[in-house]
Image 1 (cartoon, rainbow, N blue to C red):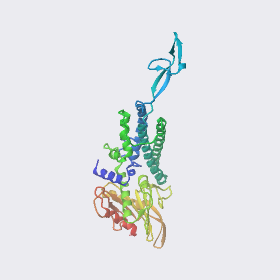
Image 2 (cartoon, rainbow, N blue to C red):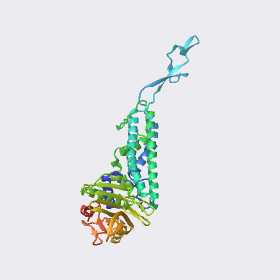
Image 3 (cartoon, one colour):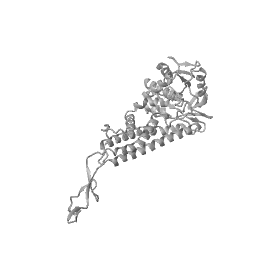
Image 4 (cartoon, rainbow, N blue to C red):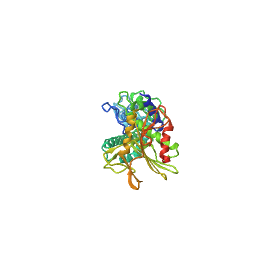
Length: 419
């Protein structure tokens, strides 16, 4: 794995484990085999499959460990492994003497050990909590993700994938609820979850499998090395690094705005993960960060942003409103270090339109293009590199291996200062 990939994944994990989810990221090699959903969501779904497959086997193996020494007395008609009955009416006269016709046999009560069931219940509850954690993120981001992607050709496939992941999450949740009910049915007494490792711990294969699975559910950081390898597969089947870099740049924008006194009023993680709008406020400014707006001429505008022809999808769009005016900046991250690629980001000056009233030479214009359309690239530097003296396009140095905050803060300072 490249140092750049390590830096991206490290910073995203520190911000929020959710940002390591695959989201709508494309695979670096679409022909390579992929093991289902990737990232934390994929890890949780695989742990769910492990518990669904293994806990039933563990219960079967647990039947070999009787929980108590209690026995049940049953009546039998054969003296084999039995003692004569102590009830008078279980005897009959035979050859002038009384002989038993019913014997008593003692069978052990095979209650499953409560401590073992309590530990399994603890693991199932951990799984349900983890699934709920993912479900909350889906609920927070689903409506915005649909709004930002519907009505575009390239958004349909992404929304289909989102629905598949959501269905898989709901299926896993239902199965975990049923598994919890099954554990309660197996218990002879009311069952309470316990994180204490049961003793003696069974040496069966299913129990050896469950132990690391429950440890991963209790402490998600245990799975972080696996998540990193999962997201960036050595055979190029991992998530496209360009997508992770875009998400990283979005997070740096959030941090830089906070440092400039413009604080988010909404949770920034769902929009960074699955697209949407992040609202910021300060005493003098209202700023909106649009993450991955999918725009099409046949689609309604998104917060005043639209295109008149075809489709367009800038990565990050900042809209600032203050007494100084209404300003719109586009920042489109790219891993390329090519100046030609950086200059191509200027296309958004002509492609995008913004609903805002402007008067030029006495002529009223109901809409204009963005004020700036810049690239963000992993190049070293403490200052932005403008491609023209007006500053309408250029490149902001944003290198995860040695990030200098000054360049980005200077670029945002123009947005907030009206320059």
